[in-house]
Image (cartoon, rainbow, N blue to C red; front, top):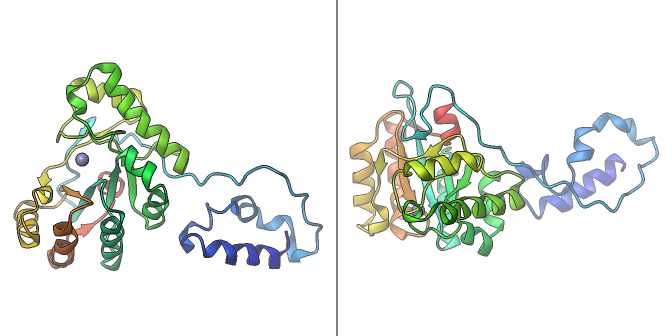
Length: 265
Ligand SMILES: [Zn+2]
C-alpha cells in the first residue's frame, strides 16, 4: 500500500470510527505498525490477502498488587475519583454521559451488561475510543449472588465472551449485578473467569431511584472523597442532568475523574 493509498484508506476509515481508533481499528494496524516497510512509497505493494482485518484489542484485566480482590476505592492520598456506570438502557443517555464527561476532560468506567452490548454493539468501541474503561456487568443483570455456581459462572463468562468478540478483551473489570459486593462464590468465579479484581464502590449515587438531578449531585458530593469509586447508571435522565454540576464541583475540589484502572494503578 502506498502512502497515498494508506491516507485514502485512513480517510475512509475516519468516517466510521473516531480518530483515536485509527491505530487499532479499521484493519490499519498492520500497515501502521510497520511504516518503514515501504519507505517513500517506492517499494511494490504487498499482495493483498483475504484475511479479515485484525480485531482491535482493548486492554485486558490486570492484577493490582496490594489491593484486595474486591476493590471498593482507590488510594486516599491522591486527588482522584472513579465514576463508574452500570452499562444498560437508552443508548442516547449513554452517549450524552460519555460526551459530557469528555467535555470536562473526565474519563469514566462502564460496566456493560451483555445483552445491552448485543443490542448496541457499536457502544463498546464508542466507550473505548473515548479513553474510558470497559468492563463486565454480567450477561443478563440478574441477582448473580443468588445463583447456583453454574448459573453465576455462565452469567460472567457470557458477558466476557461478548466483550472479547467486540473488543478483543474480556474487559478490565467485573462488577456483580444487583449487588454492591460479590459473594465469596461469585468473587471466586470472577477470578476463575479471568478478572483478578471485582469492582465494588464506596459511594452510591442512588440515581436509579430517579430522585431528581439535584439530589443525585448532592448525594454524590456529600460522600465522595479522594480515592472514591462512585456508582452511577446509564439509562436515567437524572444522571445526565446531574453530570455537569457534579463534574464542575469535582473540578472545584481538585478531584480528577479518571478511569478505575488509573485510580487503582
Ligand atoms: Zn447494575
